[in-house]
Figure (tube, rainbow, N blue to C red):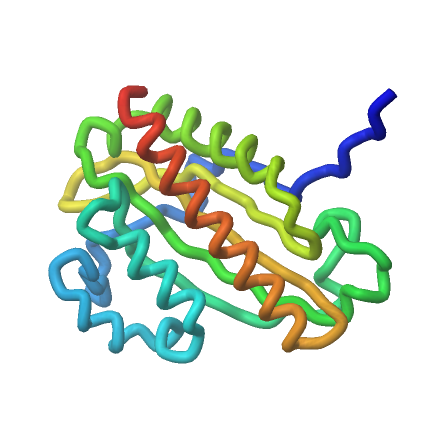
Length: 197
């Protein structure tokens, strides 16, 4: 009899589309197009202070990437914002500090950008993949949202990544591991679902 497998990383998806809900806007005045000008990454304050976020933006906006980014942010989490069960963290006292980020993603191909079905399949496959990664003290959430790009309406994904630890240094290290895994899985499943929608 084989022992039960430990659960993988905490990962979930949701759909938040409707009146009054956030919309991913790639046409906003401060949009930085990293696909056309890689060096403009230096104008993104969050990427300037967080090497892992900079790495993620470079990967997501690379020439071979099926997606591009429109906005991002990174911030500290307090212990009261961290549920050890939702972060896959044990012991519970290892969750004294947290670090988190979000990145808005849009697919480059116009037909897929317009397809809710493609985005639904994308987040389901990505979270299923992430749940097999053995990364403790972190979680990923993918949210499908309405989006606007090049004056066209479609859909996009907000990718949330978070990590926790006994202190800020440990929390940032956990977040970096989670973010890298999230970007890898998101890119992989974006390519795999290229025939959907």
